[in-house]
Image (cartoon, rainbow, N blue to C red; front, side, top):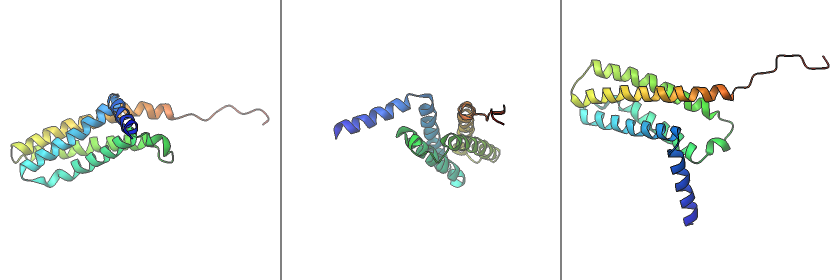
Length: 148
C-alpha cells in the first residue's frame, strides 16, 4: 500500500516539475489570492469568477497528474485546456478592469491588480497550449490516389 502512494506522489511531483504543471499550480494559487482579496474587501461580488476558474483548473490539474487525459479519449483535452485558459484570460482582464475603475478600497484594488496579472498568466497558458494544438492536426492528402 505504501508503494502505490509513493508512486502517486512521485507522479504528482514529476508533473509539477513540468512547465504545464507549474503554470497550472500558479494559476490555482493566483485564484486563491484573488479570493482572499475579494473576501477582505467586503464586496465579494466578483468572487464567482475566481472560484469557477480555480475549480476548473484544479480539475484539469488532477486529470493531468493522473494521466486520465490519455485514458479518456473522447474528449479533446488540448482544446478543453486551451478554452479554459482563453476564457480565463478574457474574463479576468475584463473583470479586473471593471474592478480597477470602480475602486472601493485597498483590498479591492489589490484584487483587481492580481486579477490583471492572473489574466496575463491565463493568456500565457493559452499561448503555450496553441502550438501543441497545431501539431496535433494532420492534414488530409491532397494528391489523387492510384487507381482513380
